[in-house]
Amino acid sequence: MNLEAQILLKVVRFLYNKNIDLVSEIYSGKIPNTMVAHLIDRAQRARNQYKNNELGWIDFIQHLDKENCQILAEYIFNKK
Image (tube, rainbow, N blue to C red):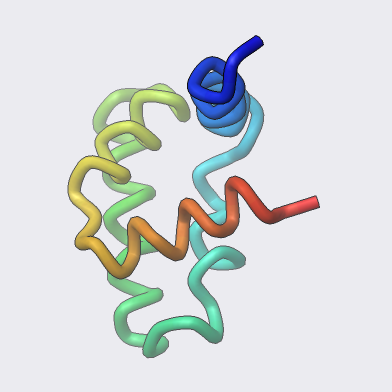
């Protein structure tokens, strides 16, 4: 499997297997607490809107700024 396929599979597995409630764990200590609270609220609203964890993740991710997207990417690709 080539690198692009491996990356895609890792992201899809993350979206499918990880609860969006992880947002707190991912961002705590990396950004100000007020921003963490905002991201948690946004993640929960996205999940509730779609009634689906995976679609909630997709909505949440597509609205992240560059810094917060980078933090999430580091979590996905470096978490053991």
